[in-house]
Image 1 (tube, helix red, strand yellow):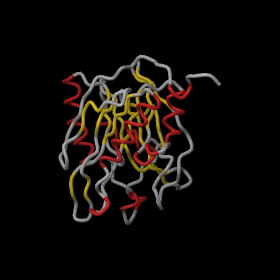
Image 2 (cartoon, one colour):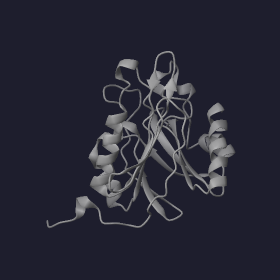
Image 3 (cartoon, helix red, strand yellow):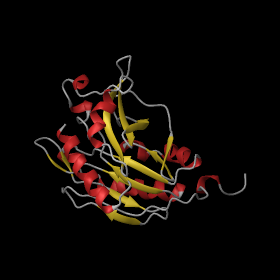
Length: 238
């Protein structure tokens, strides 16, 4: 609930400034289950209405929020998920396709949905998913003009310098698919982990419009082009 209070403050700011979509980091609610001794204690059930109840304080008539969390299914499987919360209701859900490079407690998702909110059609990929061209390509082929990337790059110090890799992935996905790419990462240090913060906004040409300050809480804002465009993957002769 501490995270919910922090997110509510950001939503209030977005409302006052006319920002329509707020993307939060991966697992912003409860943290990553891979780093938790009792992962089911932070897991949230969507089908029972538990997620909707947790998100009720974040309801807004003007701001749609994308939030990462650990989802538990009716059969007890855990998913690294992101919810689209729009006008007090969960209107969409994405499950991470590639939970970890090596090993993870999370099950892999198997769908690449797109979502439409107030004239913007967008997709969501979570952290490591952005290293794979296929999810973004499929979402763009379904009409997505923006790709949101909730991320949690809290890593051991010797592995933490990944900002350049994340930005290069964002630029590649943007250029390949002619979409805006918006990444929201955690930033800061704990006793065991550090994230330098790879949050950033890249336009469809691959130009970096905004990038976060290192190790610092930040809020990045940019106008997105919502007009449909031809996808580079589908142009040319067969």
